[in-house]
Image (cartoon, rainbow, N blue to C red; front, side):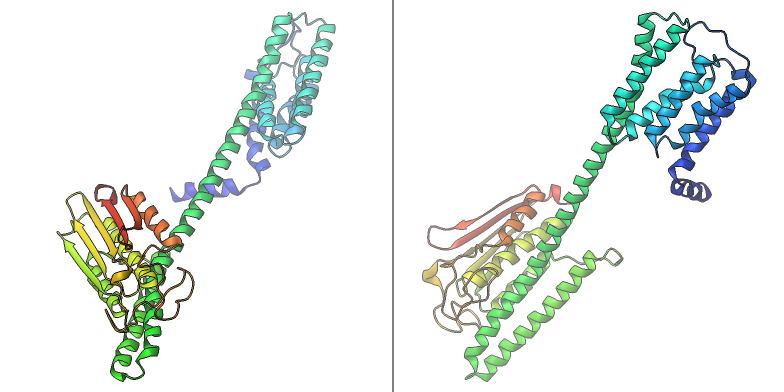
Length: 415
């Protein structure tokens, strides 16, 4: 089997002329065998002549140009047509006459330039050829002449159809490849956003909080330790992501799940965000992908809460049902935000304002009046993740001035 596969690979690497040559040689040899002589196409009632050097030359002219039918299709069909005409004029009636429709199929499939001109020239050549045969006494009826022309035109049409089919398939593959590249880039960007943004946001908030703790060394040490721990987690998550993207990495890559939500909530608390985590039910064994998406929803919502609603009470509610996982993350309105340094954690209340992609603002500045919505790719990425599993996602302000993120993630399509 391996030898056959290797031979096939070697054959495919050969020049196209080498691969087309066997058909030309086979048709030439068969035409010269006694059992096949005089059994080709015959136009008119001319008696067949015995095969001599002229017949051999005519047969070679008919069949051998098939060796270049894909490299030089125009020249190939012209030479084959000339050989076919001589075949009829000299009454060889060789089997090699079937080379003409083969050459026409190849020409229809491979001629790239001046295709209309080629068709016109071949049609004119056919008219001249028939007129010459009729002058020699072929006495073909108009119906026979028209049917022969239609048969030859059908050969060209088959080649043209093959050409259009190949072009359509190449275009489809190009679109698929482009869509795959875009999807892969989007997936990588989404994973980087989810992994990096949360940790970096927490580190920025914690580092800003450290500015105001010079008078309390013990709290400063706690905050700097939290920054260090967050940085280590960021490095570990980035390594995990790189392993996931590395096609040569055979080890199983662990993805976040429901078991990691308490640690995520605690990390956010260390950054100064009062977070309350409520989990109902138990995850089922088949909820791996749904758990991962639920984790990303909570992670992105907490990241935006740190940025835009720092110090506001944030409630994370996750319910594990038999058929779906429901997630709700909400922040209180601006009236409930912490107003003094240290409330709800080591960070100063109301820090980390500014846009989703920009640096955090000075302490005491609120980002979006208690909003955890954000303005970048985060929520759009969540909507895509949840939608890919057939779920529902929503995010928007609440009447009291807070913000609510909801997601419903089915388990059936999460396998």
